[in-house]
Amino acid sequence: MKRALYVLSFLAFVFLFPFSLRSGNGKNLKTEGSENDNKTEKIIATFDIQSFKISKEGMVSWTSKNESGSLPFILEQYIFDKWVAIAKVKGVGSPTPNSYSIPIILNSGENKFRVKQKGYDKMSRFSDAVTFYSKKEAVNYIIKNKNQLLEFSSDTYFIVYNPYGAIVKQGYGNSLNISEYAKGYYCLVYDNKLGGFEKKKVLFKNTFYPIEINTPRFLKKRKRRQ
Image (cartoon, rainbow, N blue to C red; front, top):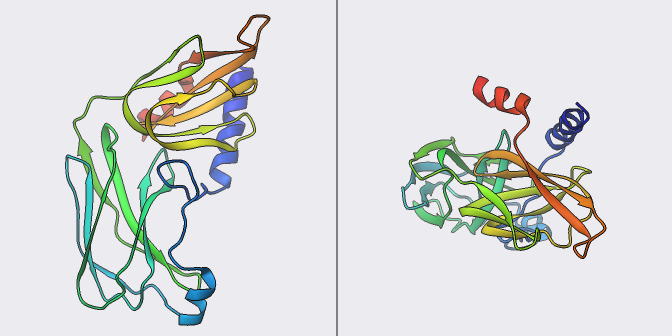
């Protein structure tokens, strides 16, 4: 019961505060050109999407027109009830059709993507969301290497939250070093699913001992109702 209440409070925190813009390797996304440059040029987002495709190999491609200036396109993926920025590419900025492609790692099952631009006026313009269903095998994870490594069964996009609801790590990969994580319960979003693990203090050589736990029952019911 105590753990269920904790997870409920954690989810409330996550959905009240937006995800930080991060790139696939866990670092903050860097915008091409500074915010002051955009203000000086007074570029606004005006693009129109002519086509938007997702391949089974994991390539997101789109063609846009009517761009009024060079603004970055931010690719977003819908991950566990939230739009998350996963990559970006610099826009050409011309009104003629321009094509873009970004390689990504698909989740098993449903994958939903869109692109957006934001101009000097702080107004964001979004494309329609496009959905692709992948037949790849679902991703699982285990704790290995004397309880210091979390290993996924295949490459996946993941996000780790600490006991206070802050993002500890996010990115693409098939493993995660958790040897330096402090004591507490961590929520893990991966393959568009929610899991978690807990690190407890123990009187052994490995000071912190992580234990894998299953997704709480009330969250499983929530996913089935969607």
